[in-house]
Image (cartoon, rainbow over all chains, first blue to last red; front, side):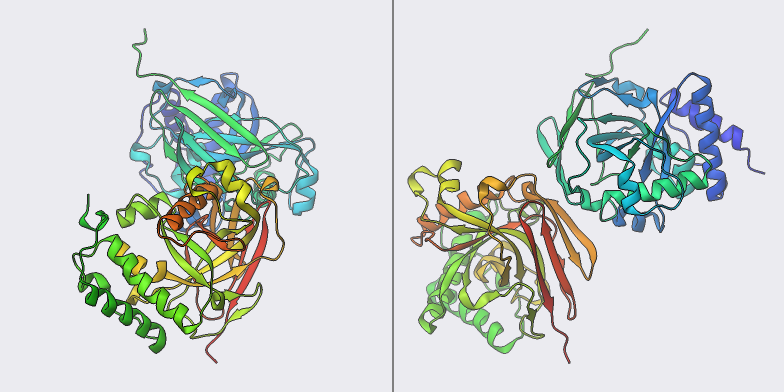
Length: 259
Length: 273
């Protein structure tokens, strides 16, 4: 018998205290993994956090192949996870953070069930360059598919840059991820399922199946457009995306002693 | 620094001529050859360019016309793989041009691969004495999206820097898009690139993957061509180097490249029947 509550508490505590936890010992089903995720988010809501959107994961063919799956995954985003563009994150608050360049959608109407790409686009008020700070709570950033789903798909924090009109083709926007001015990743938004709108289509379907459909005002992170880069203290992190501008944050200098 | 990076010639003229003839034989027989570095273990990059120059002269004597140049090794990761800190170049001949949308006949190439690139078409020779970014922009007439179909006369692409430079920088064929764009209308650094093979997106990138900006690659080439006494000419087609990872092409494949803001270009690979 899988103890959903106990696993959720373990993962939530690992996230809250920035301490790595072993992978789940016993195999769990996809449904159980999402149940653990939902239960761990309930603990965040109980602490006063509000759900403000979702993130999509495994949205590149390369990552699906790597994990041996044919389906994208998702996780919940809360207001406490949002870092203002240009802010500094506290490095010791993470286990082993990495960053990925992404595109964010802002919805201005609900998006439920099976929708076409055109219907999905109609629900989009704006798009923006975004950075997702992912931080698996598992030791050595190693996990199975169900492990990572239970761990809220490794989501940790995210930064959203300036919002732009979504009615200009965003299916193949070039992007550059720089760490302290050094180019680390170069790619295109086309790496997100061939076109980021497909990620929003999948988001609408998966969240509806989970009984938690996308709402007006939700932010949807479409998924990583390149491989993730490991973060270090004292860095300036920037993504620049063609036509969309940039999103930025800093990581704090080394490990100040905290009382 | 590796011996192959020393800027001097180390190989006897006769050996240069012999290796050049082996490469030409690979073209003529349609059979790849063993890596040149086996026979030319002391060869420098300069020796490799000497081999390339022997064949360039041979082909020009045959009547083939040079229409431009290709820049290779423009990705940091690829330079690291080849243990070099600079790009390389090869010549483009008129008979290497494939019309956009056409099919490359099966057997025309030995082991083709495709890359998405920016093609610069030159308005004039850039002034090699003042190769600023401004001078480069001013010397370009327009840009086109391009597919470079690279090929190697060396078996299994088992190449070192010496092998690829000697082998005309592993050039094969090239395909140009047909809608010219002014540089002012393109974001050369951030232009997104997707290469689709049979409808499946398989290679992604952006202009920055080519030496930080394809214009930087053009600047390197303009200086290099002036140095070797073959300055870039009005009307020359300059292939920038790849905007993303290279992809192998098999018989029957159709390839489409889209570069955001620059346009798209396609080519097919014929089947053996």
